[in-house]
Image: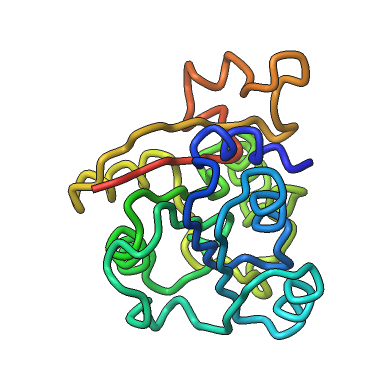
Length: 202
């Protein structure tokens, strides 16, 4: 099971209306439909991923997030998800505004480019890192806006976005005994957290 599902499960109410933006193959949405009985809808641009979602019995539409969410009414969902996609859109600030227009609450996850391994890689090798966390070269990556935990929180402040919860996870995921992020990630989240998970609202 994806490590972030443990955290997301705590923030999503059973039976709620969920919009999953950039839903990929539908792994997260399928989990929420099966385990939280959510009324879910996925948004995806890749045709192969859409086919895989449909094969899972999920409701999904084809749409480019960079064009906004004008086809959805204000507050039409309880929770809007954007997992590991924020860094791949052209205008993350605009996408966040649209998410908070159509959803009462939003959950965003992204790789933290302020993680110590990224900093060390840049310092020692002098080039963009390629790793399990970021497995692309600078010239073929779908990620166009790398950000850090601090960057995201500054954006929230500028847009008057309220952070309800924040957690960061190490590259190896969560503590298997407690099923929570490792305690040391809370001390220096921007330095030790490889993946950031935010729960926000207006």
